[in-house]
Image (cartoon, rainbow, N blue to C red):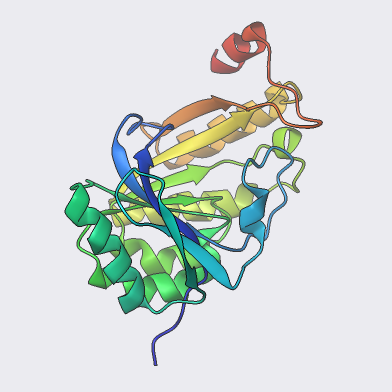
Length: 226
């Protein structure tokens, strides 16, 4: 019996972050998250729903509802229908936290011919290791405690980076910075990444302001980069 997955939505859009910014991608958003970052811009993905939404035509925002959960074969049909409209170079798997559904991804990814680009909070190394053979990219958040309000996840981040680096796939780290981000957290993150591989790209992502979370000032961004 196939493991079923809980989707939020599937759609075509332009990647807005990281080294592939500007690339047209398919976005597969999975439901469920075990973190509660203060700056999260998609809290609706923290829970699963009995209905998901699939784009009918690539980039047209003409969504139609489907019942959740779905099988890997069902998802593959939805993905390939959109791939016929536009040859997307990557399938971005995001959430929520996609690694909560690693078993579903482990069944789905070998069926899918589009290179997979995983967006993860980088705090589930064991689950990441199970699907790394099926990935082309890992986009990994470094959760700076002063930015996100979560407990420190440095060791989890370290193990995720070690697994990803050992696999030989492409990887970059994303650090969301806010007005509250401390130099100490930035230094800790930089040292952690450099100890594993100083060539791993670090992308500073100024937060999109939401209730209670302030964006960094221009001088704070410059100081953070320095």
